[in-house]
Image (cartoon, rainbow, N blue to C red):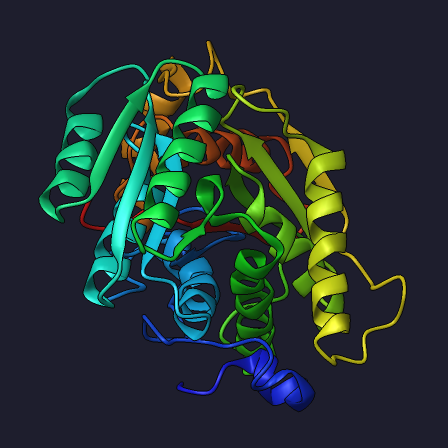
Length: 327
């Protein structure tokens, strides 16, 4: 599919909310093997240079940076950030210079591979030890690019601006089309990890607009910045305001899907694996054929396992896989 659902549903936003296709849609849905009532929507292969949820956000944010003539993009994430890799690869491919503020997190082989992938693009990397230091470093990188003619633009952590959230409003309409086509039943709950909140916020708005009777269950994986139900809801509301300002005839307030954000599977904190995540990763790989790292998506898999065991007869559960399949 080339034309996004959002442009088809709201033609008035075309030319105001730019879109740059980076992956092939729709991403596949399939039932999990030997787990009745559990389904998977697999965004792991969405994207040519890198996959996962960060690519869906970049389809809207990168398009906007290019429209505004930006030459440099400054962003931030953990040293093992999927967002940083996606920005570094896609923005560099589009001809932009990239600078990344990398917040130190617990080190393992996966984190090292992610950090190496960012460096391999030629991006400038500034490693910091705290969130306040990260804000300072980002400000300095923006200022330096501005005074040297770099025409910088800023992408927030995880790409979770209202414009970035459009990626998962779009994805929710994609899911609704798959439900309508009979590819899967309407899920009772959709389970996603919550780091910067943009994926969950986009789904809360998009599922509400699409009319699906689905609760978003956000599995908290981040304790470095405030993130919970109020923050996710505010981000969803800001995304609705962006659509209205751009000409979409959304009601005010916009319909929103129910939301729960739970920290039950966070463990010691951001970047730390847990016993549950370390066992959930191979469990879901065996049942659904998805690969995941132990500190983001595997915590959502642990939540899925517990929810499925607790409520096996209470309607379809959908795990939305958000990690690059090659990472």
